[in-house]
Amino acid sequence: MAGSATDKGPLKIGLFGGTFDPPHIGHLVLADQVKHIVELDELVFMVANNPWQKEGTRKITDAKTRVALATVALEAAEGISVSDLELQIGGDSFTINTVVALKQHYADLGHEASIHVIVGSDAAAGLNTWHEHERLREMVEIIVVNRPGGHGVAPGWRTRHIGIPPLDISSTQIRASIRAGRSVRYLTLDPVIEAIDKFGLYRD
Ligand code: ATP
Ligand code: MG
Image (cartoon, rainbow, N blue to C red; front, side, top):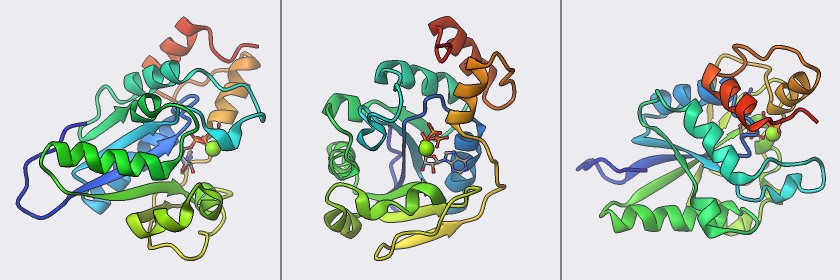
């Protein structure tokens, strides 16, 4: 994460949290579209250390490996970075803690930062289940992006809706395809597929 010098007020930072197990073109198209439409200074893929709301529902790939997958997925991206901040914080990943730490990170670089939390419309429906959501809603704007099958946004948040080309792609589908021996080419980038092969992920 960097921060460009600006005299236009606070840096506009997009915080795009996820499990990214694995990252796919749905994530990438979303990030690129939002970055340009919202005119973000930087968009950060924030890899969850422990995605506590998914705990017990399935086996989650270890966080460092998911950071590696996101890193290769974004090798060619400009103004979009991957952060392991939630791994550094450790434990369950609560966006409230991430936002506080992210604001501090930019403050240490001499910048005020306004944080725009980016969610697909499936995740947006559950915002009021997030840890300390009442405090969080005072601190951020929510950027809601359409997702096939997604629901509306939970009430009470400062939101902006961004329309993007709908892509009905999920990490769940990709994991299932790999387990079944089907091709996932073009659903994610070739370097991600190579890393999945190298690490032997999703086969069991
Ligand atoms: P899984 O199937 O394992 O839940 P996922 O594809 O939903 O994986 P996540 O890491 O859970 O990916 O999602 C991170 C964020 O990206 C969420 O806000 C989610 O709504 C959004 N997102 C994921 N895929 C898409 C998509 N195809 N279109 C729009 N938003 C998406
Ligand atoms: Mg999901």
